[in-house]
Length: 612
Image (cartoon, rainbow, N blue to C red; front, side, top):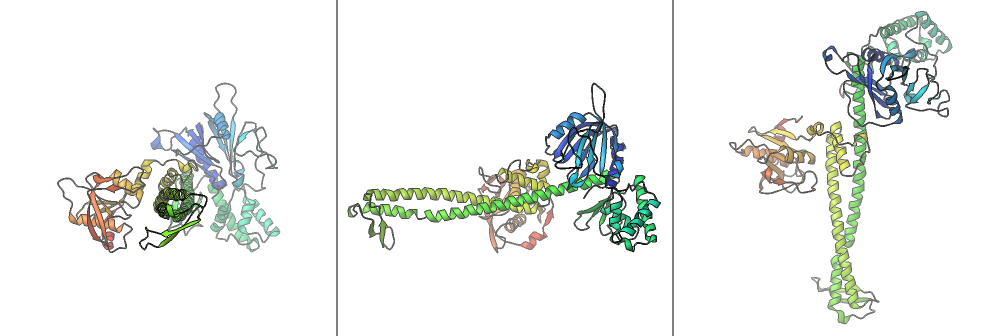
């Protein structure tokens, strides 16, 4: 979604109204191609805000894939970038006053004329240029005489032969495309252009003819002019009559008059079912009739909503891809380690055989001579007491051979314990990864939820710290709602809470629940923690509520498909978390148990209250 000249024309008017004579308080760089200007406006945001702060944040992004310009009352405190470009902007523009904003030649360029803050000497204005030109987008700071001081992208003659964007060089605007400013054209000139094109290039489409002839009109605007004339964009000029041209001129002129008079009708067009933004327009548009229209009072409100939503969607998509990649990569890596441990365990599991060989050699020392390469005897450790052949080292004495087997036994036994501990650790990691994957699937479209998962991956060492701007620990308040368990109301009116993953289980048991609440869990199997809220000493827990809660604990466990399951319950104060235990793991005491026949219909029929 690119910024066209109509959008910039609308924004220029709103920026001038808000920020003319405004003071630049500070500048922030939040991304490689994004600068945020903190401006103390000369005017309040609205008459209601007249007594409030007049600080605003002007967001300018020259990112080729998502160019932006809009202002807000607040700024998200995201990661900032230090750069020499930002340092020079701060030095030259901080404290400066915005005198004017220009939109030259109806092109995709804005010029901010700024009077810098100077204690001494003659004041010379600065010009901050924003060129919204796709992959050629740039932000350039000029002196009053058009000499370049710095730029977001420094370009020498090797990169751009037409113009050099380098300190000390005179600024040259982007190459002219020999297009006409559509705001200044008269009807005679309009008809001359099209009649000439009809003669020279009959195969040219109507849409292409408008785009190639007039500055600042993108594909969407060209189509809008044609649709409002009740014509077809892909119609060839050879099929266009003089009557068609008159209707086309009327449509074209009406739109241009609205732009000149600053009559804009900003709107977003949403896909009805998914509510995804499919298009946006600053002028009244009739080409998106199949989409849901969301209108705005001004261009800035529209662009603020649009770009904040697009940035959020982009961050969500980036996090989704990053988390999915980390989970897949580590799942494969840990599985390989588990397979490796299992192979090693197979190799050392016969350590008892070495011990038996050593014992048999010691028991038969008098029958073995040095130099023998093997020894055959009865294996008294075998139930069948079969004969066994024991290989020997010819260079060793019988006792040394026995010691060698005992050494092999100790080494194999030690290795077995180490490898078994490693295997257990890898299996625990797989379980953690499985829980995070489950949580990832639940929170896949939630930015706070994804940030929480990414932070957990970072803490576990599976994602590198500082790998992305979202690697910082998310704010607890924003993520607290994502940890809230599901709340049910029992047939007796008691509150029952159910954790749906290990993180929710921990939060429910150790943050939300009180000591005298009743805690339930399926016995000896993975599942949800369930809490029945205590109503006080005067109220004893009804049996019906206990059975309903036990049914929930059984239903939300890995034994869900079993006919009957044993559920433990105890007071929450008897539930403890071992040191360094993984999320969801607890130990408990003084429990009682009851057998539950899982009733899925009852679970689906229980009153459920969403936790937001």
